[in-house]
Length: 490
Ligand code: UD1
Ligand code: CA
Image (cartoon, rainbow, N blue to C red; front, side):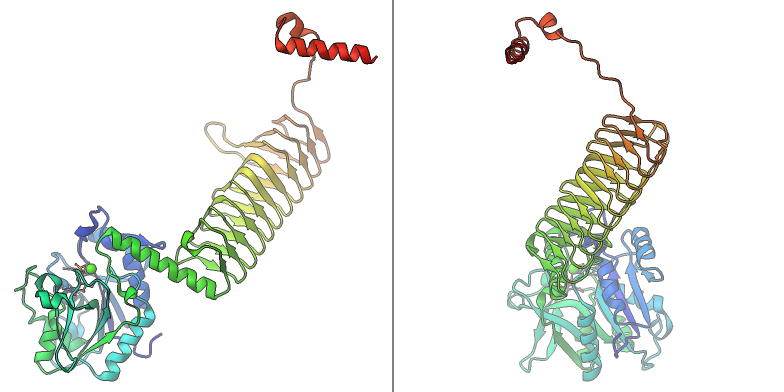
């Protein structure tokens, strides 16, 4: 938590984000498994502010419901009409009340207020802390976080005088050609003296190209009133990327992904081809895990020490324990035990729990099932709603028939069983410990421990059938040749 704990953080998230051309409000678009506003709120929380308020407006119910679900306790302020960023901050301060309310008590202090936009998801808590620190160390009335960007189109430009002091921020739409050439831009992040901010906001006018109250005008107002205006240049301009359209959304996703993978690699994870791996902020790793190309790790997925995932896999909310191998697999809400093996070409659906050294092999689908230690389901099978003990082998092409058209039923198979290939286990059914089942069996009745269950039609051979029913066919000729050869050998 920052030593310069601000009195409040105001997050601006009331805009529609028309340039996104979306039914979803801009701040609820996601990158790396978290909404844009979620990234900003998370970074803001790292500052440990006394108060945090998110200004909402467009699709208010949706944004508030999202914050309530993921960031419980987050306060919101309502900006009924999106009259600009200055107006939005005014609404935020009103919600916070006290010294910043609608009738500010002049000169009563009130501490630092940090303002961030809800559409800058790459901003880190560390950068916010550094800004708050510079702000108080320099004794500024306002400190703006700026950056030198290769393309400043669309951003507010930082105008400096001959002594390099910041004099104003001019919005792209209001800028002269000369100002548009400036590459230092406003990130939309500020630290303010709360009291001076509240006072200055009452003086912001709307005589600009958009007819809005610009927060950025506060800088000029404070400077003209003789207050200290400072700027802090971000070390990495990519961190302040603002999302206004889907091209920038994709760019931010890529940058965030690179940052997350870099952290993982620095912590000892081998990522064979970072460019083809996608991860969410909530994914965790242990050192010496390996991620192969074409892999997506989403939600609360955890990859333990020495485990290898990929290539070409998508794991959501899945735990892969130490030394396990997951290859060409889709898994959701599953647990893969220590040293277990999954795939290639497996589908683990919610509630799959593979024990240590267990196997879900090629073309195997599992759902809501517990597979004991050392148990193998190697080929072409569906295991649904089942409990299987330890060191059992399930034959190829087995189906756990769990659905009778109305409800799902459970199958229990014991430990050290060997079930034959092409078995149907018609649930509810139980196979006892150490039991065997014959290939091609449809198991509808419980199998006692240690028995062999055979549940299939008896084989009947009708000799000479081909010669009689398919005379002259290739099959008949082959059969005749084989019969003759046997006769000659005798
Ligand atoms: C803003 C800044 C610009 C800066 C850029 C950085 C102003 C006037 N301009 O421009 O200097 O370079 O961000 O990304 O401040 N919002 C509200 N209520 C409103 C208007 C906006 O809550 O009435 C919110 C939006 O939801 C958004 C944020 O404020 O999260 C910024 O608004 P946006 O319209 O994206 O501003 P920019 O044009 O990007
Ligand atoms: Ca923006």
